[in-house]
Amino acid sequence: MDAHALPDDDALHALAEQVGAALQARHLMLATAESCTGGWIAKMITDIPGCSGWFDCGMAAYSYEAKQALLGVRPETLTEHGAVSRETVMEMVSGALVTSGASIAVAVTGIAGPTGGTEDKPVGTVWIGWKRRGGYPRAEVFHFDGDREAVRRQTVAASLRGLLALAA
Image (cartoon, rainbow, N blue to C red; front, side, top):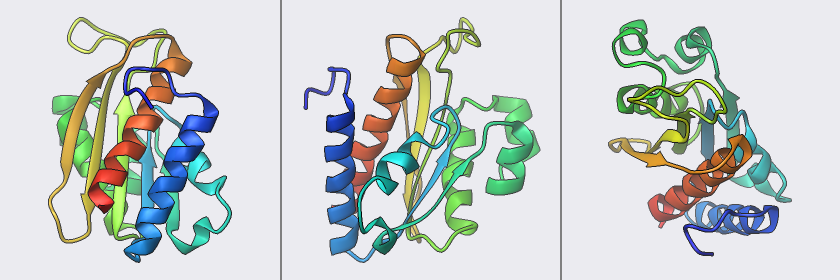
């Protein structure tokens, strides 16, 4: 799949299947912590029969309060850096591993639009974090184009591609 093409459902499903095969081969369990995608990554994963062998849980944490309660994001992090930041996604992905039985996690936070963007963080700004238990978190910022659905689709695809790389 072209990294710049808007992924359709079949492309997302194929990526999720690849992630599942890689996780299962390495006996890794996955947790997702999603803000702007609202559980879409977990949905793609759970569309795959047998995913219970490699999917532990998914958390859709939109509000500051949910990010704090479910994922252990510190209030100071949200106050100082905002929900859409490297600092927040790093705490989200680490928190997903702390609060789950998973061995690998992905976290996403971003501005899908059509509103909510600022000059510093325009619509389409998305932070994605990945981490394996016992390892260091990695975060990357993306600037996706398109409407709300396009931004979210691209976020799901980038999240799955990053998991595939981390599980390799």
